[in-house]
Length: 495
Image 1 (tube, rainbow, N blue to C red):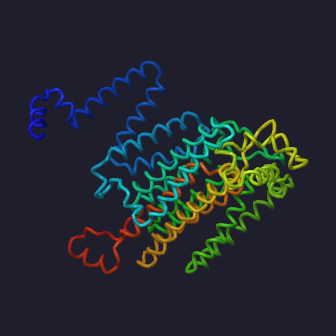
Image 2: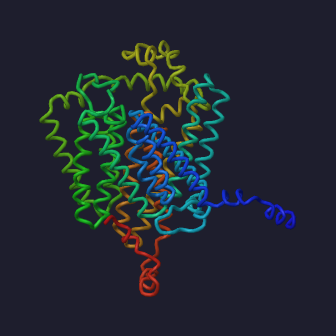
Image 3: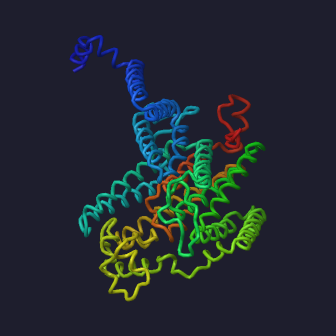
């Protein structure tokens, strides 16, 4: 066999040998790309410029995958802008391909390069099992789905999110990478708010709630989803401020907090208000050593919110309106009726909107019947929707998976605290609370397939791996004196 292989190599043509070289492949791809961009510029300038930006992004992501993921993250906040949404999907495909075709990074870690491999999940085998079982159960639901086509159209979203979770968890398993990802998440939230405030965002489908008050929807296309993202970004910003020593960066982050807070208030989201209250209580419970600071921040936020509501009677009217949650109560009533009929298996993935109109007469008079019959809405509660569509098995798997991801961020924070690394502990706690806020928002939104939620969930395992890899104080002192190879995790800060 060896002789045959040698003979085949000897007979290989020089052209094939040259094309097999990486630098040759890059040159060929660059030449073809330049020709395509030139032709596009000649035909339509904006198309050519878009292709040029995309080509530059691909080149940058190929050199540094972590930076590529960070640059991709803000685009996730513009799903209602078709061009940016398309660009985000294309960039996501590039990230996955680069992650899959980087074997040299699977076994070692180099400065500025992503970690590609499954060592991140070595300490969390149960997390992998839960994620796999969840995806398999959702796939099996096609067998009993009322409408298989509707189930199939949603199933690929779940598998794509599972892949996103794995890629981000493994590629960003360094403290500086998680900081970069958190900053990118905040940047996306601020940009989305800015676009909405200057009136450059998409036309809202529902610009006003039942109280007739205009609500900010930014690049999300929905004020409630935008509010959930902004609250998570606000929590991350506080964590980043606590995690950096750079005064200039702190001022930048403080300005971002201001823009984020203005945007959050402008969404007039009651669900976000509940999520903020729950996150504040969780922070008081978890951050025992920082309870005074946390209490101070909560008091400041409460004073600002009270002043804003006092100065805006329309906002107060919206917050206190008795409108059955814009019809959510009726949707939840129908969901519970479906659950009683199909408690084990559910009606199939993405099939709530298919069967909900059949339950209108069963549950009695419904004030918001139009959003069930003529304009079929989702449940506006991720957990009830999963229960109704995938039964107790599917909902239990999803809830357990969420808890497992939150636990990884919690363990990472405790590990950093044990190492005396307060700045990175603050970052881990911020990721934990930001993710928790998104899960609370899920009680008022059908956000189980929200990419921002899964992005934050993936940062938990990444942080835990980074915390495990961080040297103890006894290991750091000799390493600095002898070789300087092992860096203090606190040195991975913005500068």
